Image 1 (cartoon, one colour):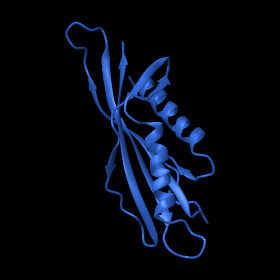
Image 2: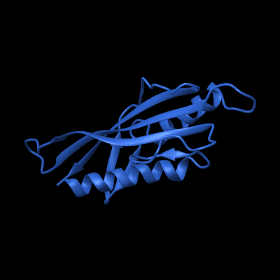
Image 3: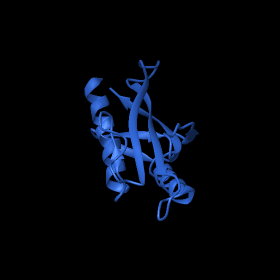
Amino acid sequence: MADERTNIRAALLTRVNDNVPGIPISWPGVPALVAGANLGLEVDVIFDAERPRALGTALNRIDGHLQAIAWARAGGNGQPGTDELEGLVDDVRALFSRNQTVTAAGQPVIFKTPQPVQATADDGFLARGLRCPFYYFTA
């Protein structure tokens, strides 16, 4: 299932990258803050569980979630505030809302209802978090 996880991760991160233009995005292993950026997004894909085949089905199920933390520099002239921050969170929520699908290796990744999560901001930043749970069936 390692290859399927790689395919899922690539498909979801590509969807974010393609649909959130002009915003610095931090991926796993990439620094969170971009020099001079006032608004940004940290994204990771976390796999929660693998469920073996249920009776009567030939499919395994992989459960996980996409975690997104939007941040904005607080205060100052011309700096984004909570409106821009909430707009960015809403953009991500729309990409991965309930029953949305993203194709990974020819199979759909199916999303459940996104939920807000606690996000810790560094000094001088505002942050909002979002957890977008999903499942994926594999043979």
